Length: 395
Image 1 (cartoon, rainbow, N blue to C red):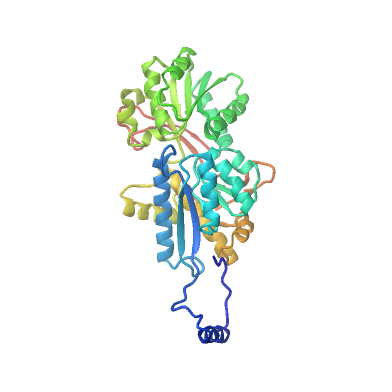
Image 2 (cartoon, rainbow, N blue to C red; image 1 turned 120 degrees about the vertical axis):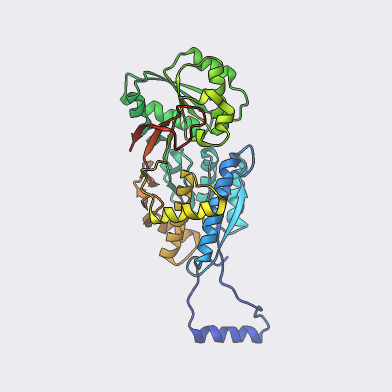
């Protein structure tokens, strides 16, 4: 793939074409080189295929609108899509294929933290930018790899923002129910560390296998410990299962989900009355200052797919625009040039200005962190985002 284009004089270009024609080597048509971006996401089970589908839709829309507007530095953009299946080995192999087969200038769309940590090693080895947006493990940026960037949240800041809410609610005994992944255990570790600032609060971590289909025994153990609140740090299917089976075995504690999984369509049909009273944190709220860029994205997404995007899709959109900004800054789509340029890009994001903090030796290395958390409570069956009660804000 040709990553950068050199501007030739008209005389030089005509002379070169004439020579090629005389040699019989001139193709029938000549096209500018496309810029290829790799999308490596969980598009099938056991990966989080629901989120993978949303990722793919967002990426395809961005490419479509970008090409309709003339592309980047005069080149059209192609998307090379690979399924990581939510598996570490498959994800790493998919990364390598995107780089070596598709000649991707950058990799976007990564999801599961456990998979992302393996994919980072591939990005480092090939010196290709890897853009994270909803992979929460601190290590993704804490490792300070020059090739890795994140526009999105991370565990230690989320945990730090959750502790004041726990204190505000008067919870003294907390159970963190964590899936055995970098996502679940990473949050549990970060929360346990952050809660040291509130010595009146005790924490017990209960972990389980991420792919389990029955949490009855686990939830019985949790219920028997009689906590004030259970923070469920797992993805949507296990979240629903833990709530339903927790109430079935007599869990009386409040429940805070790991994220806004209760807004997905299968929440209420799965949990029923057990969902009443559940609190979920989210980065989305009507009070957010959506920019002109963000409004354009939401309008285009709604027109294309018939529904509004989730907040994580805003961050993914910003990731694509960060890569665009780096290409425009350097006039090149060559990966090594983008690795050098990305730390210093700044642009209008979907919910505000985007730039990276570059604090070596910390989690805030190639990290954007201008997000706020909103805690919302579901007070009756079928409550959605519009009906949920805002019970806390952390910034």
